[in-house]
Length: 129
Image (tube, rainbow, N blue to C red; front, top):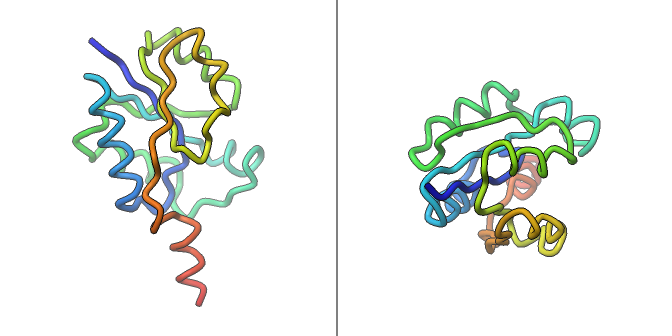
């Protein structure tokens, strides 16, 4: 079984997120999403989410392409997750290109093109207008 993992906040879940997750799932048989906790988002990423961790987790679990959602609590857990879950492919959006190349010693690292016309930031900005 080929295992894939990706990380993110996935607040205001939109079709760009879904396309990324569907493409990630096509790279293997089992997709794990490490979902940033509310505390991690606030303290480390300086992000305030609209939806709570539990709400975001339920939305991701409802997607057919997602097999397991785990909490992301710190930047450093990626190496441990790859080992513990026997990950074959690490996937991130291409806005992170090169940032996780150090993981190539543990697994394949792939940066997928994002959907350029949509983002959570764009949705928030459009709603503020």
